[in-house]
Length: 147
Image (cartoon, rainbow, N blue to C red; front, side, top):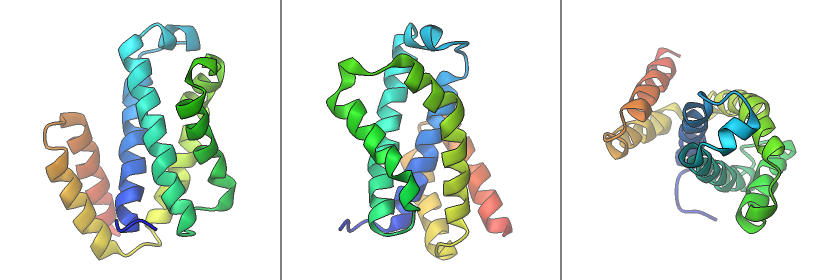
């Protein structure tokens, strides 16, 4: 098992989802997205991160077993990169990721809030170079501290 506290993996997933949304927001179609090479490649990397972090959440029974598909999708991205269906990627990026984000945001309610707050503070330091990620983390932090 990982020595990282589970809250780090939760934040990893949320940051990666935020980045996927950011990188894909200007595309109007799967083909449009594919032809924006930097955004497409960056999104694929974030999907890999989501899958890897989700593997740890599943191992610790933090994430429901139905989300094993996220880890399986990551494995396809990693091992069958050149055989990936762009329409499938587009569907994940524009539809399925929203459902998964909602699930992860629900998980936040059931973890140690003090640890989560410390993890968010740590992530703010780690991502101080990224204005969009910092803004996202600050928003997330204010929502968590409200509850």
